Length: 254
Image 1 (tube, rainbow, N blue to C red):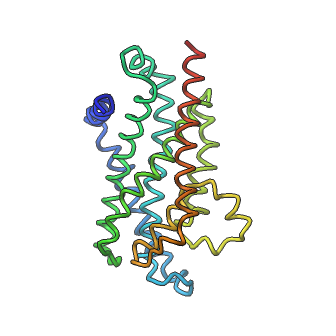
Image 2 (cartoon, rainbow, N blue to C red):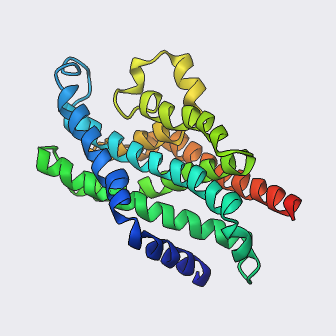
């Protein structure tokens, strides 16, 4: 735990001269999406069977997507730059710090950024008129778990990419698909079953199967074993792939 706190503290210090960029990327941009989709799509989605107003429906999805997008970008592009361009990881690994603790520290720092983004969006959603109850507080820990999965996916991609430009392909399969096919904007029932089957590797639709019923107080635990197992499996596999990828890449270069 000491190593994790050191890495998180290093990230906080690094934000000292970059807080404006973080504010725009982590706070301001997600709010633009929330207002745009929450009100812009409201009339279009009025006839859909979503059991609530569209702003309340889309708020959990936007909280999840903005956090996932932040985790993907930080876990892939930023980690790739620190590891292979700046060689910071190699310098840290020359200390008693080990690779699993380094990955844990990086993932924790990314998850904290995602938590800030989700919390701000939740507060803004409440101000805009979304129907918020105490169940929404239970959404935040689940979003952190999804952020860990997406950050690990990004790190695995970073371990495979020889150039940062190659990570754009990863964004197509994780970032864009999370927004469109992950259920953030529309119910997954609007897509054909074969589309949902293809994108079942995404953590987002499984997490939203918890989050949306949790938000409106209709969560049925007995019907969610599949989504819970899939979410746990995706997270564990993502972390294992990231750890394996960096072990192979860093020790090969050494």
